[in-house]
Image 1: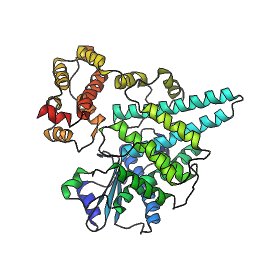
Image 2: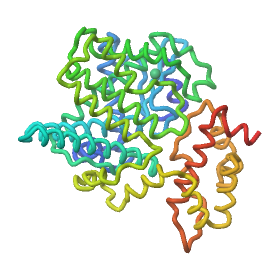
Image 3: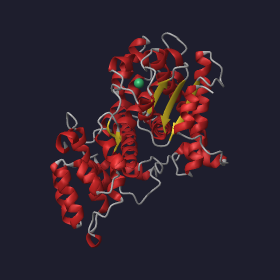
Image 4: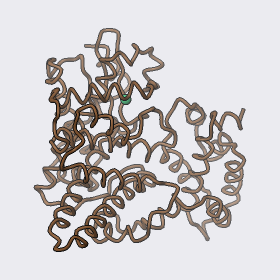
Length: 438
Ligand SMILES: [Zn+2]
């Protein structure tokens, strides 16, 4: 057994071998909710396929114990690699990133249909209008994905009503994207960016990289997945995979984590470098890729409420399975100026809830988290600025405490506002939490 395998067995476990139906597999790929065990197993299979492709491109044995690739439901980063003294290495990919990759691939199918109908419009004006609408729909779908992750901790429920053929095509793109993610992690190892990690480092699960190292890793990864083909058109399959992988990584990291634990440069910057590197950049796909990037920028602008008109198609196309979930309202809570929201939260809080809000306002996050019932270890982990902290981890903590006045409750108001207050302190410069709590 390699050290990487040994390490994995010690800290984590393999997914349960459950049986699942083809329908369930289709559901996962379309974003519909399924059993956790089935999801974990299907994600493990996706990674297995990805690792075979990567092993082949590295010309190493497909079953080599040198390369251990696993998905983890709840990981500290979207993907990470650790090298071991015997030359083996472990790559971990979070469910959140796999969710993002499958969802973004489905979104691309939606987008493609939009582009097709735009091209069929009779007038130039009609085509432009239809293209704008298509970009808006894509942006709304991405924003809905972010909201789902922040409010429920998962993308399940963001279902895409795609035809079977589209789901299969989306699955193929997802696999191309996954390959780039794995190749990027392997590139860090090949470039010796990951020192052989000490045990404590390993369980902490991430090693910081500089931005230039990230770009070097992208460079090598792209060469690995495109098989060194120069001038590969930007609309070729592998290039779409690279494009979507960068987009999915961006979505995962900036949507889910309050404090990003990596130094990945923004997706758009990474894509520009990749395009340059391959000498491409002028292809048929270029205007569409620009429209997709613009949609992502709008979706990720979390300090601005999303335009109300944007939600219409999301609702019309029944993208969100949980119909009761009021996206516009949740978006308002996530993105509107916080000060007014805090006043409203005060008004409906229990006495204890008000005390906790006051602690948060003073920046005493450790005290607020303890008052919410967080265990000492969690409070310490959150205080440690080397760690990524998920928005949902904080929200979940608030949700399980009694912070609202039962008669007059607005639980989602309180929990989203509380989470934003904690996030604000945590993202202040120089480790705001430590400064306030000593
Ligand atoms: Zn990296």
